[in-house]
Length: 235
Image (cartoon, rainbow, N blue to C red):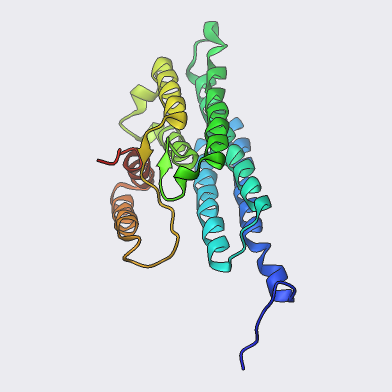
């Protein structure tokens, strides 16, 4: 006869901590990304944001599979996201603007911190908005962070180099992304409530296409596809 596990068995006591542990790995990755950004190591800063986004995806899926939801987990997830997908991309932009901004406009790099501010506002709205269970309203913070990290980290090897070396284009990008974070535009979501093909056909097709293009166009493709695709408004 199979053993039945209750909430008081050692197995259940351990499994309930797994999602929060993964969330902490998200937070840790975000902290490392911040350090790398301050040091001007934009590629490594971007890689740790990508890693944080993987942990962010896995903690929700793990909580669903293990039925280990908790109020603490929800709050911890938001707090981790503020660092990994708010502060980290903000510091990347701050460091980049310090590099390209003229000395006479030394205050300009601080505009980059609009990203963590509006990311925090977006996360606070998300936590109290019941309409965002299966889709997003406004640009999700992970997608925003991935887009910023990709653009800056691959600047030297991309055709966007001249554009991204223009201070005012970077500032315009910051303002547009800040608006999108708190906008009311309905956007695509990669949330999986289960792993069945029928319920997640669009998501699976998108991930397959992202994998194909990322292999042919390198790392920038996957993040660009994701960031652009979620911004398509439902017809």
